Image (cartoon, rainbow, N blue to C red; front, side, top):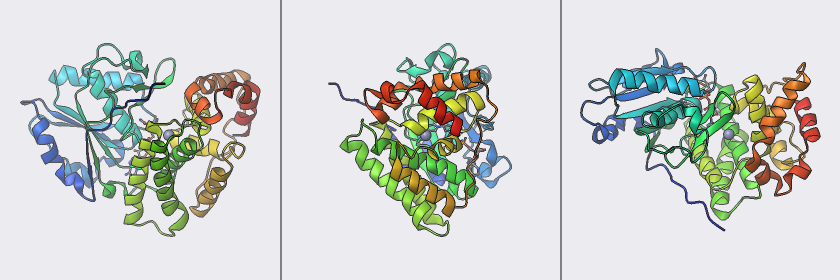
Amino acid sequence: MSFRNFKMVSYVVFGRASFNQLDEILAPQRKGDAPMIFLVDHFFEGKPLLNRIPLRGKDKVIMAEVTYEPKTTQVDALAKLLKEEFGSVSGIIGIGGGSTMDLAKAVSLMMTNPGSSADYQGWDLVQEPGVYKVGIPTLSGTGAEVSRTTVLTGPTRKLGMNSDFTPFDQIVLDPELTKDAPANQRFYTGMDCYIHCIESLEGTYLNEFSKSYGEKALQLCQKVFVEKNVWDDECDDQLMMASYAGGMSIAYSQVGVAHAVSYGLSYLLGTKHGIGNCIVMNHLEEYYPAGVKEFKYMVEKNKIEIPKGICKGLGEEDFEKMINVSMGMKPLWENALGKDWEKIMTREKLRALFDKL
Ligand code: NAD
Ligand code: ZN
């Protein structure tokens, strides 16, 4: 038996207004006049946060287009643009939700690795460390700030660049940055964390390491979405730490049924990660009875709409595609249902589940 030996984020700063320390944090990482590149979620276009970015010399701000989740073509184009304009850069700083953070990680890797990011979708295919990279979340829940992957949609699949070179060198956890997130978006991304916890804690891969983080993250999610009646600063603090702990939990376990099915939706229909997980979770009583019950309570309490009937009108071929993508997520199914998962989750059963969504 061999135990996972995983690389973590090297530096972490946490606190309200810790964003103000960014200039100081970046200073020792600057290599001559090679610029720092700030990849900023397009939500912040024209917002005061842009004026707080500590630009020096040739530093550049690029607004990240995240209407759709990151694609390998988008990553390749950004890396090409930066190489053409600057040759080399001192670092990439991703400021935004999971999509922007994933873009930043991937672009950092593609500044030093040859070819296309699509060549590295998989496990441990990346050969060279990327350039220095920083993650600054403005939404809490995905755990992308701590994970060793960056999820990309490529020409043939939706799969991450999972590697020891993928985690950020530095993350800045400043809960103030999440305070203007709309209630729906905050809920969908927050539920990504809640679902990570349920899938990790109910999974067969569970050990004390992932359990400790998973239980803490779950408790924090319950505080903000079950116990609290108004959203306040403490909620932003707690959800940011929930995301971090939830990410740490799955680092040593795996996600499960909701994610495996949601990847199918996302591949075919472009359904976004957070909302896709919610759409699926709504129908998983059979697998996660207590979690689904609480999930439904949170949906109602927080007055959130979960779309229904999104697979209506799809043809047989479409269902086949979604089933193939979903069935391909073997470790997720094995974690959820055990080694004999293929006997439990048949194509017919999965088809019936997609039908309900
Ligand atoms: P997101 O990054 O896709 O952003 C969702 C929307 O919220 C966007 O329109 C964005 O502009 C907006 N937004 C961001 N910050 C905001 C703020 N403070 N206020 C208002 N609006 C804001 O959403 P997400 O749920 O954080 O991330 C989902 C992405 O993360 C997916 O691409 C998914 O594949 C990825 N993901 C990655 C990992 C990982 O480990 N790398 C894990 C889970 C999910
Ligand atoms: Zn997730």
